[in-house]
Each structure stands twice: as C-alpha cells, then as structure tokens.
Length: 455
Image 1 (cartoon, helix red, strand yellow):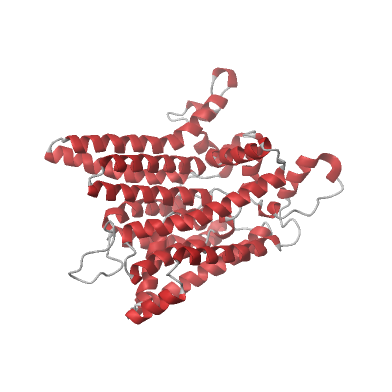
Image 2 (spheres, one colour):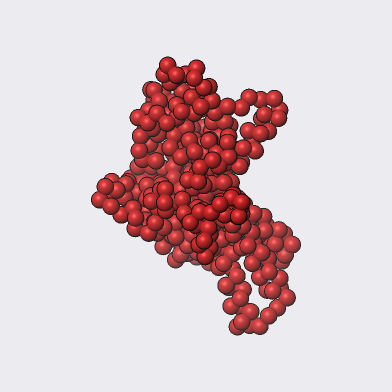
C-alpha cells in the first residue's frame, strides 16, 4: 500500500507540487484555448459581432469581420459583462449580471487607459480573459493551501490528497467559463482564499492568538462580500458566520456570558454584516437609480425588501421556484444531473465528517485543524447551492458555479486516495467522474466557441 502511494507521489512530482500544478494548469489552458479559438466563424449566434459593429460604426456594414482571439471568448453572458464594463448599466435587465465583476473589469480598463493603453471591445475582452486565467490559476493554489490547512500535508497520503484536490479544480466542468469573461474564476479565488483565512482563524483561536484570529475572520468576510458582488451565490459563504454566531450564542445561554465569547461573537456578527453588504450595496445603487423621486419608479421599488436582482431574474430570465421544470428543459436537467449528484453526495459525506485520510489509530493527527471543524460549515453552503440550482436556477449553470466550492473536490480526491491505497470501493465511479469532467470540459469548449448551448 505504501509503495503505491510512493509511486504515485513520484509520478506526480510531489516534491514540488506547486510547479507540477502550474505545468498541468497551463497545459490544460492551452488545450482549451485551442479548442475555443479554432472554432470557425462567429458561431451559431452572431451576437458577438455586434460588439465590433458598435465600436467601429458603419465601416463594417458590408459584413462582420473575423473575430479576434479574445472576442472568441465573448459568448452568452459575457456579452453583457463587457457591455456593462464599457458603458455602465444601460438596460434594467443587465442588473442580473454581477456589479462586482463589471466594476472590477472597469477598474482594470480604466487603469490601462490612464497608462496610455487602448480601450475598445477587443482589449476589454483581452483584459477579461487574462484576468480569468490568472484568477483560476491562483484559485488552484488557494485550494491547495486550503486543503493543507484542514487536512495537513505532513505525510505522503496527505500531500497526495491536497495535490489531487487542486488538480481536480484545474479540469473543473466549468471549463471554458473559467477562461472567458465570466465571474466564476473570480468567485473561486475569493471563496477559496476566504475559506483559507477562516480556517486559519480557527488555528489562531486554538493557539490563543485572538487578534490574528479576528483579523483573519474579518478579511475572510470582506472576500466573501466581494464574491457576493460578483455572483449572488457568494452570499452562501455567510453560513460560516451564521453557524459560529449560533454556537457562541448558545454557549452564552447555557454556560453564561464571558468576555472571550462576547468579543468573538461581536467579531462574527460584524463579519456576517460585511458579507451581507456584498448583496446590499449593489441593490442600494440600483435603488438610487430607479426608485428615487427624480428617477421615476419600477414595480420592485415598492417591495418590502426592494431587489432589482430578484426582479430582473424573474421578469427577464424566468428564474423562480420550479419555473425551469418544463419538459423542454429535461435535457438540461440530465446534463446537470451528474454534478448535482456529486454535490449532494459529497455534502452528505462531509456532514458526517469522516477522517478521509484514515490516520493510523492511536497516532496524533498531523493536520493543523481537524476536518470536522470546517467540513460541516463548508458542506451546508454547497448543499444549498445544489438544492437552489435544482429548484430555482437555470439548472445547467451548476456545472460552472460549482467550481468555487471545495467539498466535492475533496470527496473525489478522497476516492482517488482510497483507490491508490488499494481500496477499490470507489475506483470505477471515480474514473467515470474524472473522465467525464475532462470530456465535458473539452466538448463544452468547442460548443462555447461555436456559440452553442449549454451556457
């Protein structure tokens, strides 16, 4: 058994895991880049050609010009993202697309213009594509560090587990969406970094370093708030703060108040408010635009809790409870089925908080913190995401928005470690899952480049 682990570690060059992950990442990205950019023409839908038309005026009236490399990545929602980044929110329905991501793009583009660089749709697309690639690469490293923080990396088994977890994120079914002008890669780096800081705060708590603990908690909250501005599902990470607040409040009720618990509760509640601000701030900006006396009024302005996001999702995109449950959408449910199953299965697995690395009985764990202290906190948001995708979202997007949640990577990595250790229980299912991820991402890249579903 140990010889198998050693052989696997040697094959994967775990003596320098960051270098191995880096090489694997850029080889995979190169393959996806070719798959997307090699697709001929503007694709099934010609919406992307409207961007050069808009930028160049009547000079292109004779017909669309061949799309440049970066514009080949501008498909589906990314058309809206680029438009908002360049012009701001012009149409009400554009508020369905994350304010945080478009502001981030606008920030980078403004910096380029100030430094004497050129603007324009193609350059905006180039900046967005580079940003997505860099964010995805950093999120791979962040997941590796997060895994090490929770499970340790002192043994070959643990190191292999951390490496495989990060490696699976490279070939995530999100595929082209982690390379294109979308918010998925940004959410991944923000979520993984936030989880890393939060897990580090538990280590600081254990070591009695209260100032370091509080600083990490609040920094994690800020990252989750930005993730929420990029994609609304980032708000699910606020469960960490809600959970800890309930635990601390219950401890105060049953054991009596203490200065330590009271101060920690204040920090946790403040952190939760920071996370919530990621949802509130864009809504306030929209309210000022559409609902102030000099701006007229829209139907959602009179809601008990006004939300332009909820309004445009329902009115323009037909998002709502069971609204997507139609016969015509059955193929999309079948497409999302494998990921929904993995998300639910891994969430239940994590809630049970097993020792995934099977430490030898009687030996002290080499992990900085025990898996059980974080797994439940992370399993619940992932499970909620799966339930919401099944009941209320355009279900096929689960294949890409799942990329920013770590538990299902850990589940597959634990199956891989079991397989290497000679425990064949999960071997066949794991092989199918990984092969399916790679095949799906490649096929999806070709479909994406051709402007064909699924999106």
